[in-house]
Amino acid sequence: MRKIFESPLPQVDGASRLSDCLQVWELSMRCWTVDPAQRPTAKMCKTTVTYLPRCTPTLANADPMIRSAALLENLGDLESWKGNLEKSSAYLDEAMQLYQEEADTKGIASVLLKRAVAAFRISDYGKVRAIAATALEHYRTLNDTLGIAAASYYLGHSALMMDETEEVDKVLALLQESLKIRRMHSDDVGTVECLETIGQIQTAKGEFQEALSTLAEAVEIASRSGDRLGLANVLNLAGVTHCALSDFDKATDALSEAITINRNVGWEAEVSTNLTHMGVVKLSLGDSRAAEELFQESVSIARQTRDRWRLAQGLEVLGLCFWNQSKLDEAAPPLEEAFLLWQELSKPSETKEIANILAQLRSLQRQWDSALSWHDHVIAVSRGQNRYEEVAQYLIQKGDVLVKARRFDEAALHIEAAIATCRDNGYSWPEERAQLFAIPKTAMKWEGRVPLLYDIRKLQRRLPHLVTASLKLPILISHESP
Image (cartoon, rainbow, N blue to C red; front, side):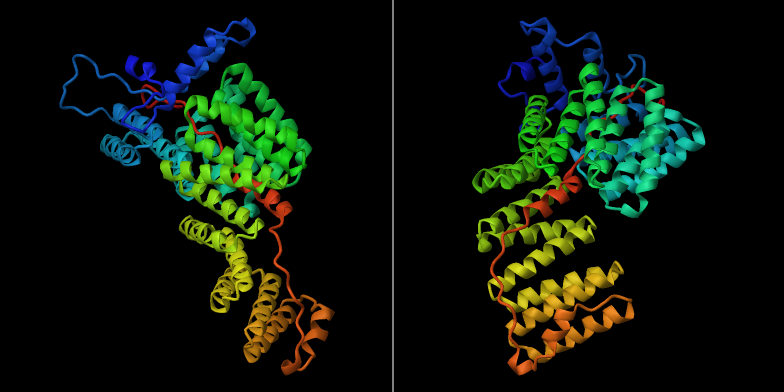
């Protein structure tokens, strides 16, 4: 431990830094602050120590050949914090096997929750949702209120991040249940997590003032209790909300503080998210060069931490930043990589968004076959989502490209398909389009298109979907209820 603290940049296993060591380091530095008001309180110290990962020591008289399930699950959690995903999974699998052999339901639920948290730390929300749902069933069977609170939070937040907007009421119910239990047990860290996610929903729904009020309460609780990671995450979302309101000074202040805290405690993955949002603020202010640098750094960190979700976010906005600077050749590669990542993460709405951008980009470059291929993906996703008005709109867009490629017969077929889609699903057909298509195909005069800069307001509206939640959970000495 002394070697870690004495080094300029605390490290373990080469480049893998222990976030808990850095949190203790940052806490100890604040203890020596000249201004007494800036020194941490006893409650702050307790929060920092309580919520760090730890390993249960082996009893001196224990059989060295006997494997402790409680030790294995906490080792798994510790490796997850360090970013050693394979080691974490191996420890948790072994702990699960031992609990299953003993028919220990509480232990099984505890391992499931740690698996969900491990997936949550790398933003694998599909996996989080599946595991947290199973953990919640176990905790309800056990009538373990704190376990119910933790599992409900992870289930609700993962459903939110998977864009299951039709289930927003169910998500809010889960979060409110978790929040009520955590308030009852004076769990400040858990309370901040829930308030942050509720604020995220309010921001996504455009309820910005309500969101800021919710986040202000979370900031007050996190500051009072010394929950530094929770404070950083809430400030990050506050920055997003201020950006959506075009209050860029407040957005910059909040995000700058979040970046400082996360760098000090060594949580690099969250720094990646902060940099992405700060880049969007700079882009909104017209400073594309500064935004590009922030996005590049965000992408680099996401690659190092092997976080596909954050990497996809960073690549997407980097591509849009290039687009905004009319660097079309540079914009395509990051957008295409982001498309593949969102596809791996089962995010059809994100793949549709990027495919539509790439279709426009390739059309501007007169790469007709590539543009048509991207249009096909957009149409297929919209049809799979039963969004037939969108299908008609995208068929028209593809028809435009076919006309520009002088493939008039195919263009006519797509226009007819768009008309049929509108008619069959009860949508009106735009009159100006009907007049346009009445022109003989051989003499069609299509509107000229000027390369458009990417819509910054649209990117700001997408910001709530680029938010991640706090990345911690009470780590227990045994497999008692968290």
